[in-house]
Amino acid sequence: MAKQKMSWFLKLMLFLGLAFLYLPLIVLVIYSFNESKLVTVWGGFSTHWYAKLLENDQILEAAWLSLRIAVVSSFAAVILGTLAGYALARIKRFRGSTLFAGMVSAPMVMPDVITGLSMLLLIIQVQSLMQGILGSSDWLNRGFFTIFLGHTTLCMAYITVIIRARLAELDQSLEEAAMDLGARPLKIFFVITLPLVAPAIASGFLLGITLSLDDLVITSFLSGPGSSTLPQVIFSKIKLGLDPQMNVLATIFIAVVGTLVIAGNWYMMRQITRRERETAEAERQEKLTLEQAH
Image (cartoon, rainbow, N blue to C red; front, side):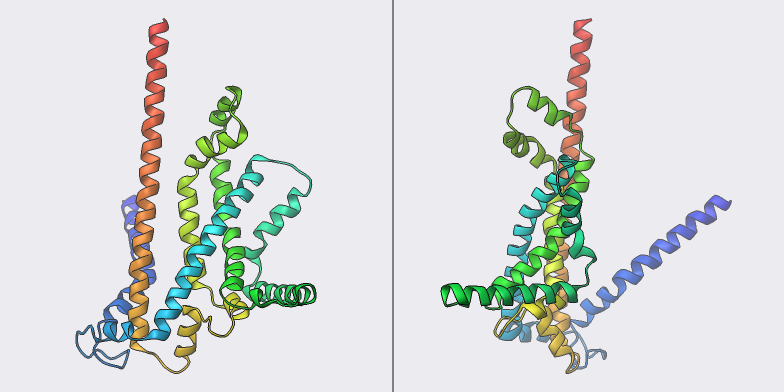
């Protein structure tokens, strides 16, 4: 009887937790179809604000800039994070390993204000140096490239943790067997290790896109004139009052991110299922071989 009560209690807690997380999003999606200009007052069903958003060049340009930065910075962070995670997971001890691990994970625990300010000071110093050497430093003006550097630094820390954790739980016997058969380390990495950590890489890439699209503080330090990202535009408009177009924009992003998450989870589950099937088949073949030998 007590077990039944606990079961209902857990279900209730799960329901309340999910409601707390997703009910505001559901309300936001519903109100994106609100005809009234007042965001909190329902005035009937309408797609008027969706058409209005498509005519808002400022928001569309900011969204396109944010999306480009998110994809490019996540791609770069995946490459750097995979290499860093591999070094930390496979090379247990090397000179400066503790310092390297601390520097890689520092952006996760460092306040965004400190990260943004430090990167801004670094960019200013590099600009001054380039100005003295080349006579021009226009290529490092604050904009797409500087925001890309900041977001790559931030995303790389999280992706490194994901890749390192995935590599730590992998069985190294396959890599060791390939090495015994004469395979070079580079071939082992691309043929064996990389496919095994592919789901973690996909998860890290999606997480990097989410972090980049969500960032406001670091971007505020590293952006310049004509390079306002979507969070900056939204934050500036919120100061003037709630705009129904923000509900529409948020709904579109929820749909896009939700689709990416579902696709990523489907891909990871498919990889896990295929790996389990291949492992079971290998064990079956090994068992048959042993039975035939006897």
